[in-house]
Image (cartoon, rainbow, N blue to C red; front, top):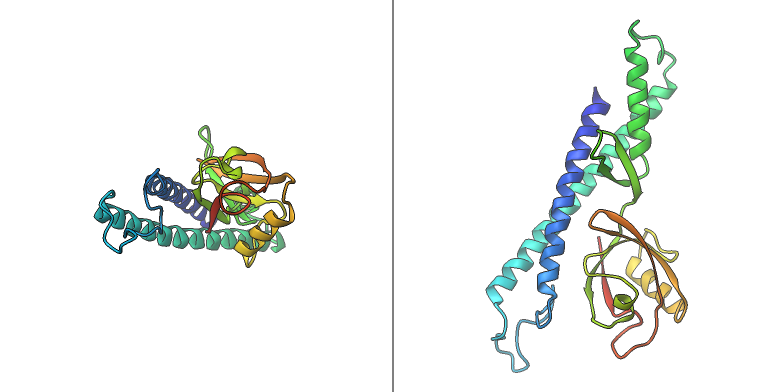
Length: 230
C-alpha cells in the first residue's frame, strides 16, 4: 500500500534527519567552544597569519562536514515535505471516492481508508515527527523548526533566559515561518525590548517552552545570540 510505504519511508527519513541534526549540533558545539573561531570566524590573527592557537586543518574539515550535513538536511526535509503532500493527496482522494466502502468482504478497503486517513492527517501540516517507542504510530510534535541557535555568548540575555547552542526555533514571539526570517526575528526582538517573548524550541527531540527578554547588556545586540535559518 502506498500510504504504508510512504509512512515507513518518512519515519526512516526522520530518523536519518535526527542523526544529521545531532552531528551538526556536535560540530557547532566544538567550533563554538571558548577560544574556538565558531562556524565562520577568522582563522587568521590580527597580523594576517594563520592562528597558532587552533587546529586550522581540523576546523576546516569540521566546517566542510557541516556544509555537507546542511545540504543533506535540506534534501531530506524536502523529501519529507513531498511525502506529506502524497499522503495528504491520498487521504483527500480516498475520501472523495464513492467506492471507498465497497471493497472486499474482509473490510480491507475500509482498513486501507483508515490507514491513509490516520497517516495523512498526521503528516499533512508540514510537521516534525517521532516514532513512538511503544508502537509504530507517528506522533505530531509541532511545526518544523525554521532557525537554529548557532552562536550564543556567555552571560548574554539569551543564555541567561535558557537558550542553548543548537536549539532549534519553532516559534519566536509572532515569528513562525515565512520569508525574511532574520529580519523579522530582529524586529521581534527590538519591538519587545525589556518585555518577555514566548519562544518554543526543539532541543534534542524535546519541545520546550521558554520566555526570553531582549535587553541591553555588555555585549552586542539585545539577545547575544545568532540564528541560522534552516
